[in-house]
Image (cartoon, rainbow, N blue to C red; front, side, top):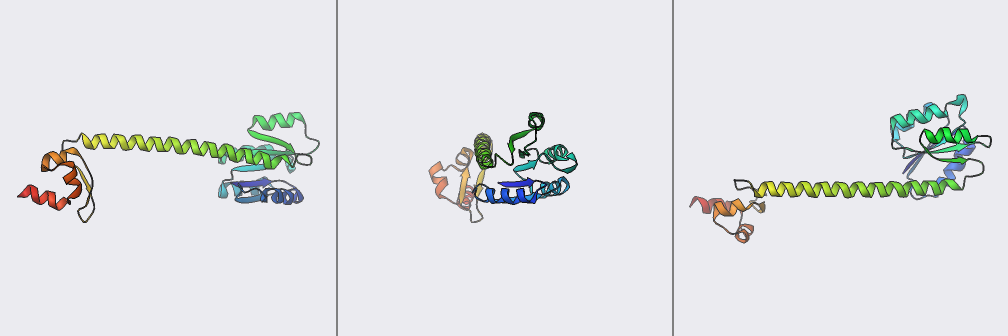
Length: 196
């Protein structure tokens, strides 16, 4: 997973990087001290998780959250608050889509667990998507096979050397060979046999 840290304090960024480096689910860590820089990193790297300081200078944290959400909707946000942050701030950011809200001075130890939870959730979502795609492919293959079998013409899938890989029952009807015989023959054998 890719993580972007957006915090006005370089000391906090350094500490977060040390903390996150211990997690095997994180592949890349990016950082920015301003929203403008964060936006450039989001466009370039599309982070899975953003750790966002809600007290960025010029009150740009909320706008930064909104802009990142517009660019990359799948990003999960962990808001990092100062000691003086209120419940109103927490509610405001959670309503905007922040998953977790931590005091960055007293709840640092909760951040790795939150990231593990996000990673586990993402893996479950990806596994489900893979299953759905596999089922869709399987259904498409079955429809394709039915279409081929019901065709009024002989259909053959073969390689350049004439080896037959797949064919429909109409090939057996047209050529006079059984399915087992068609599997053993090359396309040239069937065509030549039909011409004689």
